[in-house]
Image 1: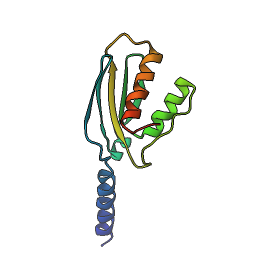
Image 2: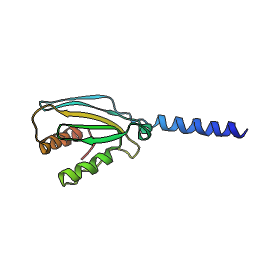
Image 3: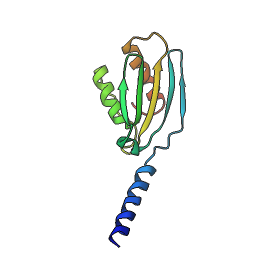
Image 4: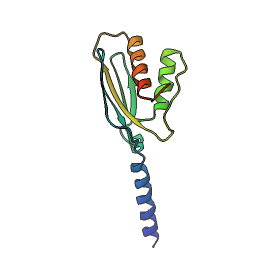
Length: 121
């Protein structure tokens, strides 16, 4: 009986974690200087491959909350961007600098794209 209740609790936790995916349709990002996509992520990714990496030529964010991204961008830009997503929303964002934008221009372009998609303000 003890094993049955433990198994039920484990199943319930797994269902809750996997159901916490963000309902944001896959959106291709194609501009003169940017190429990539934004899509809803899964909260379960935090325990696996989740992460955030911003370089001069790309951003790679996998199953990560936008609040963490805004914190990083605020540090890079010395500004006050605000997260427009829910606490439980997780996103996967992969965008590359396919032009010859300098890092500041690239980050500014990312902010515009994220703002147009309602993720930050």
